[in-house]
Image (tube, rainbow, N blue to C red; front, side, top):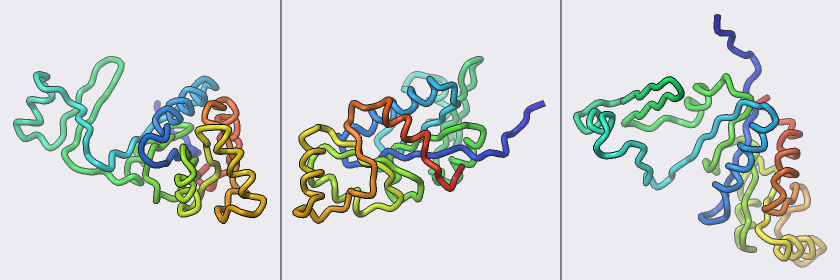
Length: 185
């Protein structure tokens, strides 16, 4: 008998502009959480609709090209569902309710706790525009130092209420994420 957990998964988002390290950070979070024995799901938002999951020459590709609105591929280790329509984030989260954590890359406007990736000073505007930002991940010590100096008066960006991390501090970031007391737990 399959027992469904009544505890909702915890959710963390990784957001930022293009080429700021979102995928690397998302992968590090997944690895860090999974290493602690947690069951982790990942959602990647493709805002440009560039991804292609199926490959020409496969049976499933042929089914989709023939007009199937959905194609399901099942093996003894994996299941893939390819639908020819969009699924809203909330609907997708509902399908992942039996996981401990869900790490979302993208969906900047969603209302879940998020880490903002910052590679350049102008990336900080995103951290101030978005809601539910719990941490800022800086690409370099120099940028972090610049923001800390700016916090003493000359920088109008408000980062004082958000945790600050360096990009390569993955273990520290994972520990901080685990401590998040989000409303979705």
